[in-house]
Length: 291
Image (cartoon, rainbow, N blue to C red):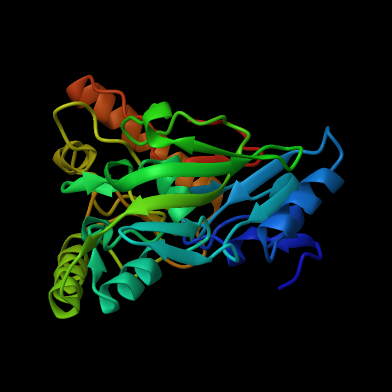
């Protein structure tokens, strides 16, 4: 796809939940210069929403007013010794496989996370074995005027599922720290991680990953399961019977169905445990009532 806009583009084509109404304008820039030119062409009052691989997102049924920019074409890779410069649109599974085949590792703990490099940085994605900021050297991002800035990781305040970057910036490139290894061993580590994910997470139906952040010292999935909410449905949205912190799309779920289910889960967990669950997913567009 080139830099031309698509108008009234259905967002259910671009989210892993397969949910979402149309975006006013939608574009996948083919390069960083094309992205800069696109940003400069947008009126200052135009709302711009940036997405990566479409995971971790719930898009409203009414869609998104403004321009949606998808970064998935920004996939360049340049390795300099044990440091890798990689575009924000590179999918994590693709990156890990490519590096492992060439004998480079250090990121295997990210296996099983479906998003892009940029999305993973924005959410400081990770597993029980680590988070992406552990392997990050620097981030390059772009502002609304199309100007880019490189920032060392020491100047970024990372936390649980967050990165201390300007909210309106677009992450365009990351510099990651690698370890040299044996390809067969690295690929086996990735395979084992994927196998564990298949056992513990629902992969048969569309989802957006974990819906809620884990509260301090506990797991959101455990709390939801303890409330007996596995299998609870609103329309075609269902609390997964495999992992209670996942809501799956059983067919034709709407965003309002997911939102209603989120509200029911939060109320039940608060009533039973006195814990307020915070969302890990991002809501995009206009919702009738945000949870």
